[in-house]
Amino acid sequence: MIEATALTKRYGDRTAVADLSFTVRPGVVTGFLGPNGAGKSTTMRMLLGLDAPTSGHATIGGRSYADHPAPLHEVGAMLEARAVHTGRTAYNHLLALAATTGISRRRVDEVIGLVGLGDVARKRAGGFSLGMGQRLGIASALLGDPATVILDEPVNGLDPEGIRWIRNLLKGLAAEGRTVFVSSHLMSEMALTAEQLIVVGRGRLIADISVEEFTHQASTGSVLVRTPDAERLRAALAGPDVTVTSERPGELVVSGLGSEQIGLAAAEHRVVLHELTPQRASLEEAFMELTRDAVEYQAAAPAATGLISEGTAA
Ligand SMILES: Nc1ncnc2c1ncn2[C@@H]1O[C@H](COP(=O)(O)OP(=O)(O)OP(=O)(O)O)[C@@H](O)[C@H]1O
Image (cartoon, rainbow, N blue to C red; front, side, top):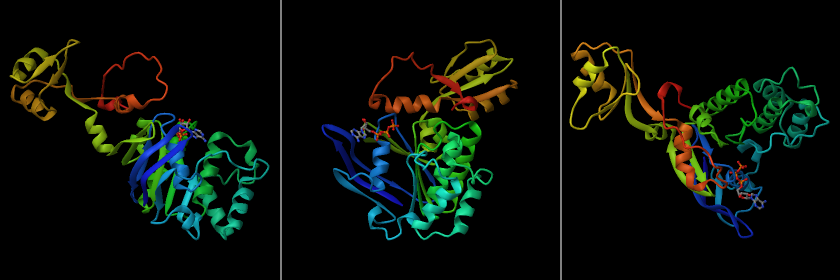
C-alpha cells in the first residue's frame, strides 16, 4: 500500500507537486497518468525518498521509504531504465546489486529468467537495445522480491511485443497481491494495463477513478446501428426523447435509447440488424478533455474528431 498525504514539492517559485493525496492499493495495477511535466516523476522520487517533499509525506507499507530496514524487499523501483553501468554484463550488474543487499545468486538467476534476459545476461549492458535495458531495469526492481513495485514510464520507446510483455508482467505482479504503481502519459495503454487510475495535471490531483468508470464516462450515450431496413427502423424508434441521425445509407446513430431497447424494437418489427454498437469518445480524447486545462505547453492541434466505435477505441 502506498499512501501520499498532501505531498507538495516546490523548486524555487515553481510548484511541481501541489497538495497531492492518494492511496495505491495492493492487488491491482494502478496507473499514474498525466501530461508531460504534470509532476509524476517528482512524486515517484518523493515516494522513494530521493527527493524531500517541501511539505506533506508519503509512506509505503506504512513507513516512509527511509524507515524500512530492508527497502529492496519492500519496494522495487525503476525510474531511469538506462541507469546501468555500461561496462558490466547484465548478470554482473544484478549480482553486484544483490551482493550489496544480501540477496542470493539464485534470485539473480530467477529474475533474469523472469524478465527474459537469459540469452543476453552475459553480454555488456552498454550494448543493450532500449527494450533489453527496460527488462534489466525491471529485473533490478524485482530483485528483492518486493511487495511494492514502482515504475516510471516503463513502456516508453518499446515495440508492441515489449509493451505486451510489460503489461502481462504488471498484471501478474498485482495478481500475486503486490502493490503496482506505474506512470504513463498514454491513457490508451493504461486502459489495457491498469484497473485504477490516478490522474494528475500541473502537480494536482485531477481524478482518482477506476478504468471501468473512466471508460463509462467516456461514453457518448449514442448507438450506431447498421441495417438494410433503416427507414423502417427509424420509424419504429421514433419517440419524444429519441434522436436518430444518418450520415450514410443503411446507418443510423440513435440517441435516447440503449442498445437493448433498439435491439428489442428491431426484433418486434422484424428488422434485420448488421451492427449495434454503443459509441464512445476514444479514451485518449476523454483523457485529453480531462487534463486539457493542465497541459503545460498546448500545441495548436486540430479539433478532436469526436466519436469512434467501441471496437476501435484506444
Ligand atoms: N530538479 C528540478 N528543478 C526544477 N524544476 C523541476 C525539477 N524537477 C522537475 N521540475 C519541474 O517540475 C514539473 C514536474 O516535473 P516531472 O518531471 O515530475 O513531471 P512528469 O509528470 O514526470 O513529466 P514527464 O512525463 O515529462 O517526465 C515540471 O514543470 C518540471 O520542469
